[in-house]
Image 1 (cartoon, rainbow, N blue to C red):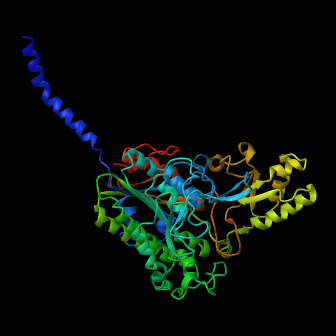
Image 2 (spheres, rainbow, N blue to C red):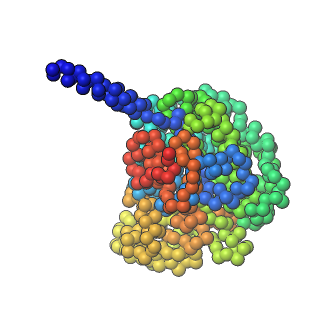
Image 3 (cartoon, rainbow, N blue to C red):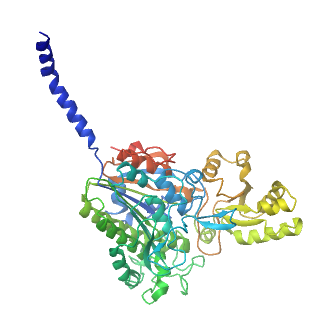
Length: 548
């Protein structure tokens, strides 16, 4: 009787057991894209998506905007808003207070020297004999990137490559465990790497370098893509507040670049052809590493640096900046079409953002009756140090200014018999007398300073106890630390911190949100998409609206 009952039970439940097993089998092979492409456009303010929208083609920015997901209110949650910190934040979901990349440079108080963010004397340069350009790695980054987590999640079977003209734009996104990171060496005009990733440059990159891409691209010179008089989003072409290329006597397009020779190595990054060169190396990397060629998700981190060089030199309202973005749009279209062919449309996921925005050129604002100006940190420090020497007998009490922060020689102050607070108060009082400075204060007293909570939180997120300075400087809106031409970025203001957030492709639900998001949200969103662990220092949240 018992056998009969057991038999009936088995017959009844066996189909359910088989169905359950099928579900388990289905879950064992998690659906993932073949490839993730991260795109960071250096110095792309959010409004550039729409400022030049009417002249973008259908396959670049518009493809991502109209067929993907956009979070219109995305902001950088820390200051200083600079390249190294921005790239690191996007890919780690973390902030300088945690990930350690407190700026492009910071001052080391123990060694009494300025440290470059990705410097690493323990690695060897590959592809260059320049004394420092190849000694680079992500060693100073204290947390994992989303690329590291992908590597860990697939037992290092995923392939990861970073490509950028700037070393910091290739290295920090690709992370500690990347197969490769490649960047441009302006001293030689060649793309290089370091022994952190490999023993020697791959043959395909050596062949590309030997083809002299700088000479080839600069043969095209630089004329506007459309008739110059149709660039209605730009100010006039010849402005005294625009910077000139070295050796050039005008800031007017077209620029004759075909006879520069070796000088072109230093100029190409500040032309649209820097983006072209970056896209060429990215495509070669995708092909030669076989990215997206199997069912194990790979990652290509690409950063376009030329908008930053162009923006710094000419400003966001220049014809040069507008033309550079219209040409970048075509580069994006070509890159996405290339990936469609190699990986297959619908098999990959893309996100696009910026590492920071940019301020208007003060001269442009003044020309249009908006208050603005330049504060020069170098002159200010010399002046204040002289006053400290005269009054307190301490020479060079201010050692350095980095990221709108002053680093003090605490040993010299102590040996002179003064308390740190006395010298800090003197410096702060002098700074607060200066035109263009909104507020200067000791970072030790940040919690006590009367500032809006949002600004205070950004400064807290940007403060690293071993790498940040002692005194914080906040300039007035539209004021920059600089000279009479060009512009910069680095503070909390919206022109520096409002950035694009675009997702497109596999697993992405087309749409738009006006909910506020942060730069830290990219990494956890991609982690959720891939079903992998978030980076170790991530403080962001998943953009759930973007995911199917």
